[in-house]
Length: 559
Image (cartoon, rainbow, N blue to C red; front, side, top):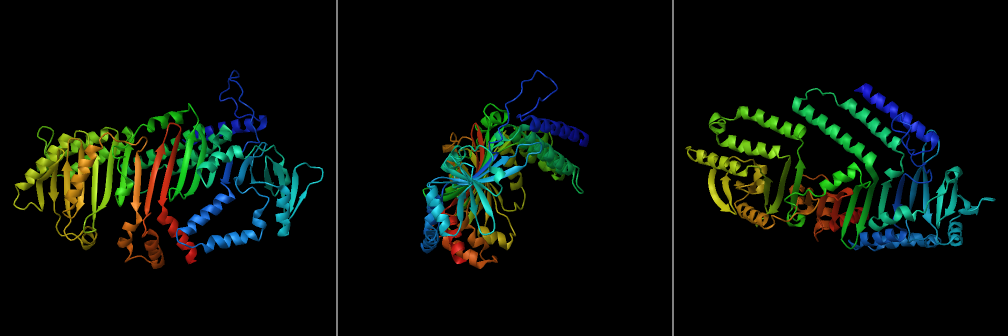
């Protein structure tokens, strides 16, 4: 393996050297002389950009941030500070500012960072800088070149496209800059602050070299670790190789990788986003197109309706997750009493249940959800469900199990067929000798309800009232059987106000808890994490409600 990696690394290193010397995007991928030469590398194109939407947008965000906690003195203080510097006259406060990252032309290209700010009026900017003792002076004999004398050093500037490009080294500005608007317009439209790695502008051999370096690094971690059994080792190894494959696909077929932040007054939330765009017609694009058509059957669920909600449609690869889970199921059968297990010719209750579970695993996907709801006594109830293959077999196995238990002298709090709704038969388990923390959480007398239908298994845990919540969820599921959000395969949401009482007594930072109570009291405590997949883009998204904005504001004000 090490030899293969070294040979691959050496091959791509040679390719990279060839690219850098000749100035082309890529060399021939084989020794064939018939393959056409790719386009010449444009060293003036940035490989990355980071930008702030505008100075005005930042000031609006500050107004909104402190307005949520009625603290107008903080924005006023910032505006007063800027007034001392002529309110930054000369700059265009409506346009983006930020930095570009370039590769320097040469055999061993090194990255260079160049900043840019939008200029509205150069004379006004000069006067603003003079106000604070900074001298902006033109470079004699060099058009559109300036130096900015600061107390301990100087900054070099070049004017182009209505922007001032600046760097500590004058030679870093010896290039023909593209208009920053072309790189920041889309970012500023969607984000307040964003950064984008422009993969399509990075020479392919350099991207593949990064893959090889990661490959070599991961190869060092692949050997079995002390104490790992076969299942743990196989799972870790296959997961590592899978992640490497995804990284390589993004490096090869990704157009750009973007990270962004937005503070939205209209939506009253903070949005953090990380996404990758695929090159049209690439392998990555084809995979995203397929994934965009896959959705969890529980994607109709509304995050706002539960204190906690999680749903997922997990793919199960045959030689990885399926094999691992099926091996665990086989091993677990050793400890099951024969009267419950039986065999193929005379299957017992657990045997039937296991056959349905195995069929579900072999289907190649696991679709499930779990919610935490509040009862009328303000105690939590957990509601969960999973889609089953051969659900009728599972249902029969559970039915047989409760009928078998009913024949015993002590049923241990188990009662079958306590309710039925929409073809789902519900059974009850009343656990004994529960620990105090379980009673503190769920209530004094928590019970478990198990619901079995033709294609789903349901579970509810809480006080008796959780049965009504379970019935409602089962009915809602049937009413929304055809409702799926495109590309919604996963979601995780949490209302933070609901967990404050659970951690309040043990929290070490009392000041934070009190601030959280104030921040979340008017609402806006919902945190939602989800991926979003379309035919050419995949992203991870984190949404934080307005309560988190208030919490940040209070944290700043309290300091």
